[in-house]
Image (cartoon, rainbow, N blue to C red; front, side, top):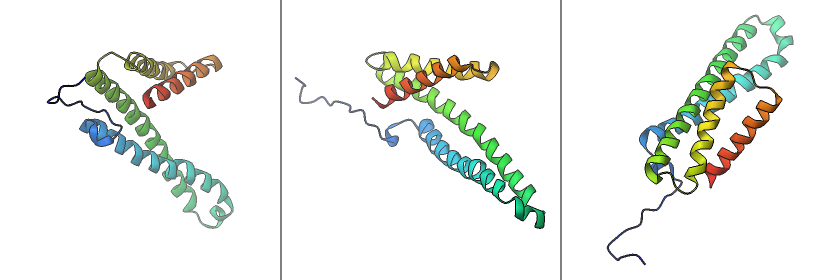
Length: 146
C-alpha cells in the first residue's frame, strides 16, 4: 500500500513526456519522411509517366531528376534521424527505468538492430540476413510498443 504523501510517476506514451532531443528527432523524422515520400517516391513515379510530355517540354526531365535526387538525399537523412532516435530512446529508457522488466529485452534487441544496420552497410545481406534483420526489427517494434 502506498503512503499518502508519496506520488507514483506514471509512464505515458506522450511525446511531451520525452526528452527534448527525442521530441525534435521524432518531429524531424516525420517531416523529412513525408518530404521523402513526396519527392522521391511520388515524383519519381510521376516522372516515369510523363515521358510523352518530356519530348515536347525539355524542362521536365531535369526537374524530375533534381527532385528525385533531393528525395534520395532525404532518404539518407531519415535513416540517420531514425538511428539517432533509436539510440536516444534506448538511452532514455535505460536512464528512466533501469535494466528491468521489458527493458531487459528491448535494449539488447534495439542494440542488435543498430549493429545489424551498420553491418549491412558494409556487407550486403543475404536472404538469411534479411530474414534475421526483419525478425529483429519486428521484435524491437513489438517490445517498444509494449
